[in-house]
Length: 212
Image (cartoon, rainbow, N blue to C red):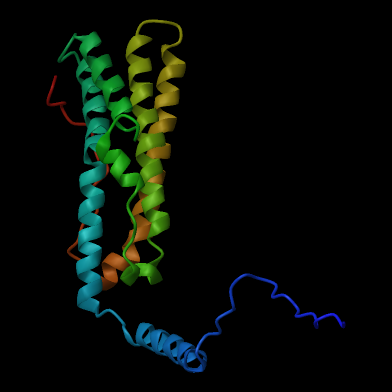
């Protein structure tokens, strides 16, 4: 008797299904259509102005408490220096609290600021770098100024006072330069789309602190 013929086994337990031929034709067409739709949608100037206004409103809200603290801290120092107040401990507390309040870890608004994303309609203005500069303005440089205010107050009448004052003045100059960089980053978009939109002043002059 002869042996039965061998039947080759399949490599897998299930037959391989081939994609319908029509999908091979439809896929490139759908891809081209999606690209054309994307290219055809250009936001109007009004839409971009609306997006810019909303973006800057969010930025102003998020940085407000940190920026306000700079004015409060310098105001407290001014009150001590000109003799309007002698409550040094309260002035130190104002400065230290303000410095801590500029940290995203301590302030929900500053934490929100680190997560701000610029709308796609404004991509051509490259504003994300300006948002990052604003975060650094607060978390690093504004916090440093307020910490230096506290140091100056703690070193009053001590040999270290002169160097503390010099460090504070240097920190203020740096803060002003960083503020100018933030304004410069947003200026082209504001000028082109919404001249009436204002980025927060980011502290201009020392002011009497509301809690002092």
